[in-house]
Length: 161
Image (cartoon, rainbow, N blue to C red):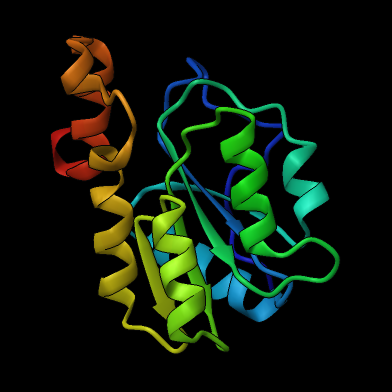
Protein backbone atom coordinates (compact mmCIF):
# COMPACT_ATOMS: atom_id res chain seq x y z
CA UNK A 1 0.00 0.00 0.00
CA UNK A 2 1.34 3.44 -0.98
CA UNK A 3 2.01 5.84 1.93
CA UNK A 4 -0.26 8.83 2.30
CA UNK A 5 1.19 12.07 0.98
CA UNK A 6 0.15 15.15 -0.92
CA UNK A 7 -0.02 14.53 -4.65
CA UNK A 8 1.41 16.92 -7.27
CA UNK A 9 -2.09 18.13 -8.11
CA UNK A 10 -2.63 19.12 -4.44
CA UNK A 11 0.10 21.74 -3.80
CA UNK A 12 0.71 23.60 -0.56
CA UNK A 13 -1.77 26.43 -0.09
CA UNK A 14 0.89 29.15 -0.38
CA UNK A 15 3.17 27.24 -2.79
CA UNK A 16 6.18 27.57 -0.50
CA UNK A 17 6.13 24.34 1.51
CA UNK A 18 9.45 22.51 0.98
CA UNK A 19 9.15 19.40 -1.14
CA UNK A 20 11.31 16.41 -1.98
CA UNK A 21 10.79 14.86 -5.40
CA UNK A 22 11.71 11.18 -5.73
CA UNK A 23 12.26 9.58 -9.15
CA UNK A 24 12.82 5.82 -9.04
CA UNK A 25 11.34 3.11 -11.23
CA UNK A 26 11.10 0.65 -8.31
CA UNK A 27 7.75 1.09 -6.54
CA UNK A 28 9.01 -0.41 -3.28
CA UNK A 29 11.95 2.03 -3.20
CA UNK A 30 9.66 5.00 -3.97
CA UNK A 31 7.28 3.94 -1.20
CA UNK A 32 10.05 3.38 1.34
CA UNK A 33 11.67 6.75 0.63
CA UNK A 34 8.30 8.54 0.64
CA UNK A 35 7.46 6.96 3.98
CA UNK A 36 10.85 7.95 5.44
CA UNK A 37 10.66 11.54 4.25
CA UNK A 38 7.03 11.88 5.26
CA UNK A 39 7.85 10.57 8.73
CA UNK A 40 9.85 13.74 9.44
CA UNK A 41 7.01 15.96 8.25
CA UNK A 42 8.42 16.87 4.86
CA UNK A 43 6.24 16.92 1.77
CA UNK A 44 7.20 14.32 -0.84
CA UNK A 45 6.10 13.58 -4.38
CA UNK A 46 7.13 10.42 -6.23
CA UNK A 47 7.56 9.61 -9.90
CA UNK A 48 8.33 6.36 -11.72
CA UNK A 49 9.88 7.95 -14.81
CA UNK A 50 11.77 11.03 -15.94
CA UNK A 51 8.99 12.15 -18.32
CA UNK A 52 6.49 11.90 -15.46
CA UNK A 53 8.69 14.18 -13.33
CA UNK A 54 9.32 16.62 -16.18
CA UNK A 55 5.58 16.97 -16.79
CA UNK A 56 5.18 18.46 -13.30
CA UNK A 57 4.54 22.20 -13.17
CA UNK A 58 6.84 23.02 -10.25
CA UNK A 59 6.46 26.08 -8.05
CA UNK A 60 9.27 28.14 -6.52
CA UNK A 61 9.00 26.19 -3.26
CA UNK A 62 12.29 24.97 -1.79
CA UNK A 63 12.91 21.54 -3.29
CA UNK A 64 15.40 18.81 -3.91
CA UNK A 65 15.41 15.74 -6.11
CA UNK A 66 16.22 12.20 -4.94
CA UNK A 67 17.07 10.51 -8.22
CA UNK A 68 17.89 6.94 -9.19
CA UNK A 69 20.82 6.72 -11.60
CA UNK A 70 19.45 3.84 -13.65
CA UNK A 71 15.99 4.46 -15.02
CA UNK A 72 14.27 3.09 -18.12
CA UNK A 73 14.64 5.41 -21.11
CA UNK A 74 16.27 8.53 -19.70
CA UNK A 75 18.88 7.94 -16.98
CA UNK A 76 19.21 9.99 -13.84
CA UNK A 77 22.50 11.40 -15.12
CA UNK A 78 20.75 12.46 -18.34
CA UNK A 79 18.03 14.19 -16.31
CA UNK A 80 20.66 16.00 -14.24
CA UNK A 81 22.29 17.27 -17.47
CA UNK A 82 18.92 18.35 -18.87
CA UNK A 83 17.96 20.24 -15.70
CA UNK A 84 21.35 21.93 -15.63
CA UNK A 85 20.97 22.89 -19.31
CA UNK A 86 17.61 24.48 -18.50
CA UNK A 87 19.19 26.51 -15.71
CA UNK A 88 17.19 24.59 -13.09
CA UNK A 89 19.15 24.79 -9.81
CA UNK A 90 17.30 21.96 -8.04
CA UNK A 91 19.77 20.08 -5.81
CA UNK A 92 20.13 16.41 -6.76
CA UNK A 93 20.78 13.48 -4.44
CA UNK A 94 21.59 10.37 -6.46
CA UNK A 95 20.74 6.88 -5.26
CA UNK A 96 21.83 3.70 -7.00
CA UNK A 97 22.32 0.01 -6.53
CA UNK A 98 24.89 -0.06 -9.34
CA UNK A 99 27.27 2.82 -8.73
CA UNK A 100 30.96 2.98 -9.45
CA UNK A 101 33.65 5.59 -8.91
CA UNK A 102 33.53 7.15 -12.42
CA UNK A 103 29.73 7.47 -12.21
CA UNK A 104 29.97 9.08 -8.78
CA UNK A 105 32.63 11.52 -9.98
CA UNK A 106 30.53 12.44 -13.04
CA UNK A 107 27.45 13.11 -10.91
CA UNK A 108 29.32 15.15 -8.30
CA UNK A 109 31.19 17.21 -10.93
CA UNK A 110 27.81 17.99 -12.49
CA UNK A 111 26.61 19.38 -9.16
CA UNK A 112 25.00 16.51 -7.25
CA UNK A 113 24.99 17.16 -3.51
CA UNK A 114 25.19 13.47 -2.58
CA UNK A 115 25.64 10.06 -4.20
CA UNK A 116 24.28 7.18 -2.11
CA UNK A 117 24.65 3.48 -2.84
CA UNK A 118 21.68 1.27 -2.00
CA UNK A 119 21.17 0.15 0.64
CA UNK A 120 21.91 3.39 2.46
CA UNK A 121 21.17 4.46 6.03
CA UNK A 122 17.90 6.36 6.42
CA UNK A 123 19.65 9.10 8.40
CA UNK A 124 22.24 9.59 5.64
CA UNK A 125 19.48 10.38 3.15
CA UNK A 126 17.64 12.64 5.59
CA UNK A 127 20.87 14.53 6.37
CA UNK A 128 21.51 15.08 2.65
CA UNK A 129 17.96 16.35 2.15
CA UNK A 130 18.25 18.75 5.07
CA UNK A 131 21.61 20.05 3.81
CA UNK A 132 20.16 20.75 0.38
CA UNK A 133 19.55 24.45 0.99
CA UNK A 134 23.31 25.04 1.12
CA UNK A 135 23.70 23.62 -2.37
CA UNK A 136 21.42 26.07 -4.17
CA UNK A 137 23.42 28.33 -6.52
CA UNK A 138 22.91 31.92 -5.39
CA UNK A 139 21.17 30.47 -2.35
CA UNK A 140 18.74 32.48 -0.27
CA UNK A 141 21.20 33.57 2.39
CA UNK A 142 23.82 34.61 -0.18
CA UNK A 143 21.27 36.56 -2.17
CA UNK A 144 20.01 38.34 0.93
CA UNK A 145 16.44 37.13 0.51
CA UNK A 146 15.10 36.90 4.09
CA UNK A 147 11.90 35.01 3.22
CA UNK A 148 13.72 32.43 1.12
CA UNK A 149 16.38 32.06 3.81
CA UNK A 150 13.66 31.47 6.41
CA UNK A 151 12.06 28.78 4.20
CA UNK A 152 15.44 27.10 3.80
CA UNK A 153 15.94 27.16 7.56
CA UNK A 154 12.50 25.62 8.13
CA UNK A 155 13.36 22.94 5.57
CA UNK A 156 16.65 22.19 7.30
CA UNK A 157 15.09 22.17 10.77
CA UNK A 158 11.35 21.34 10.74
CA UNK A 159 11.17 22.18 14.47
CA UNK A 160 11.63 25.85 13.52
CA UNK A 161 8.58 25.89 11.23
